[in-house]
Image: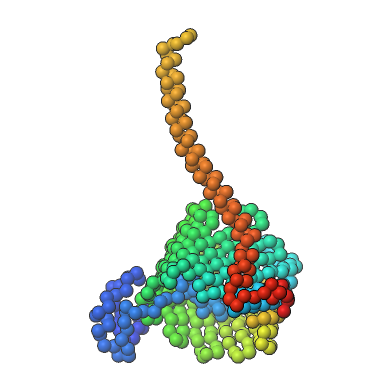
Length: 327
Length: 77
């Protein structure tokens, strides 16, 4: 939140509207009428903000790359423009949480069959793994502004399935979302564009079975060259991130996370090179973790994946390689 | 023995309480039935979704334009 406040103080030509709160855009006529040094900002035509869960999207793209261990093979077959099947084989190791600083790994092989249907109005993604777990995602545009998203993991064992229904409403310069999940989870969030670059949002959730609830606030300031976000919640979590787009091909990101309940502090620095034939992402952590992921397009339809993660603190080394076939 | 005055209020009281208990139990049974039905619905929905989601995607995809053929669905190329 500190970074967001300092950025908003540096807003150039239009004077920031006096005494506004995050929920209501300021009065149009006075602001649009005032001639500005660079451009007029019409506060009634602000762009729609990014969805609440994607507020830290740029930081996650660079910093939360999916490193893996072992061998991975992904085959995608598109039957027509919108329908495709995927087969994914992975042979690697799974970590078992153990007392002490030892890391125990068990070899684990999986096969996953997937079907995707992508339509402008309806997206259906299903994944079935060899142990009977089905992972289902549905996104349906009920009307132009209202969308329904369903995300579910279903297992053969009773009681381990999870599901979440999200209703998203997109307004002119705001978005709101209502979530219902199993274990009596209810959540709602709302994000509003306050100026051309700044958007503020808030969320609240309630878990019925554990009688827990929380409230959170988020702020995002994005320009052509950088994106800064700040997030704070009553669960004791503070997360700040900053992503700078150095050029079309390079972007650098940094992230700071503080969890007050577990007194966990982590800072991460990462880079993302998007080149013509490959994409290289790497990051360095204050937990002593260095990781990198390379995706290289060897030929149209063939992708090579190389992944490495070295945890110097726990002496845990993970290296993986994989091939992806298909678009 | 046949009809003790002291017994009369009791059956009435007993009847009242039992009828009140009956009324309570009808609403309680209604609530219980609703709960059982919703639990049954949730369980069935979960089983249907578990087994039927992937076939649903395949059916929807096979009926989209341009229609792929079964051979294209099953062949590895």
